[in-house]
Length: 287
Image (cartoon, rainbow, N blue to C red; front, top):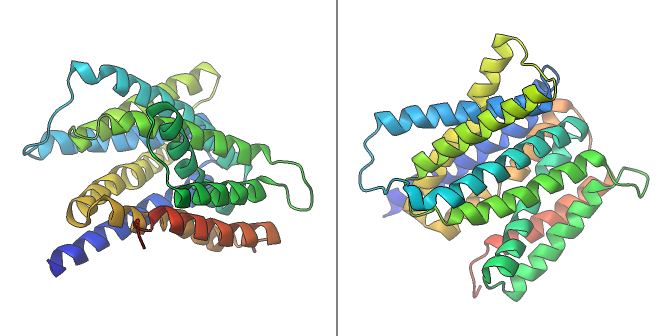
């Protein structure tokens, strides 16, 4: 039992760390390739990798997707395309450390959409967490030294709203083979984003940058999901999500180190508020 808990914790932390590196490293790649093309190759890398995994590894008792899943699968891919493009364009305009913390807004969007459209219950503590995370995102979205909002930050928040809607669609597919779902999401989102990028006149960077982007997508969007699933099956959903909540803060710290920037007062205050809000979302009920 202790071995299972230890391995489950390691899987969950590894999943969080692998996803965390996507923000600062994507920021670097955006200097070489347009945002929509970058989004496309990130997801395509994950999709191709998960497809190979799905074909090569026995499925066990996992239930495959079928025709009845088509509406939710289509909505999942469409929302992911919108979210991926918005996120990469926002990251292109905003500081990577800010984007890392702003990604916590996905928690807010997922919970609020689930409440209004799927009638899921939200506890008083979760409402407090939603308020705290929203306030922190507002601070992070302000331009330092003024009360005007950063366009890049607003695009990231819009991406989080799209991902919040997508999470609620994907939840309807949660009983199906997660590797197959991840492969479909990656391939659909990647190809869709690339088509849009080409349609608006964007072109891929050199082959080397394309391959680097796809490898990053495989690691951060593909392997991260696999380790998360493995952690969840050993620890349970609540404890796994607690460890995975470290991801935005790991990404923020990596971004500050990589880009050599010192956070301003808005960032420091927002980070403290965000940390408490994130803690409230992952704390078990009754404690």
